Figure 1: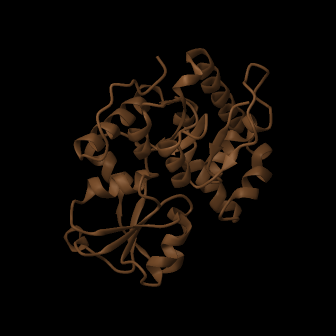
Figure 2: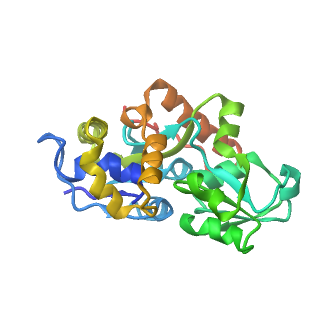
Length: 277
């Protein structure tokens, strides 16, 4: 049986409901019970141990794991108007970030990479669990925070303001949708099995779109935020046509993201193909 990991966030549980509940057909390989963990934990496992056969990771972390993993074209999170937000208690200009402490949801998250590309000022990045960032900013533990997931919809409730939508900045600079997270699988599984896994995840996405109610209890069981409207907004924002298949537009966005990461010296060049060939 293959090992599988993804986050407890609504977009992932929505996408993988069909796969983990055996609804995607007999051609799909057998998976052990999935491991649900925050994306930075999954990033670390992939980078240091190649622990899981199939796993969700940040596209930032993808730059470090291409020797062992290939990116699948289904199951990912890309889009427009859905990127991380840089928030604070009071307005700050980009030049005012120097000397500030900025919370990030993990050192190898896409949010962290975007922050570093956006501003080269001398600030301190403070990794912490994503669900604690808004309160840390609100309480003055850190000056600013880069928030993801449900925080996009709730940061105003904690008296915070958005200094910059980093996803919007990326879109304006590159013209591409922002690549947030993707599903990778071990190269050692072989091309035929990799293609089957990719298609099974694609079918799981199709099933989720066809009947969103079927996954509701599974999604709510693992969600950080239980408000139905917030959960629905989360899914609607992060699960889209790119989740079913990256297509040419999504693949170009991923390629550009990795290129800019290499140009910024965040990870080394790699001769490995990103996708299944």
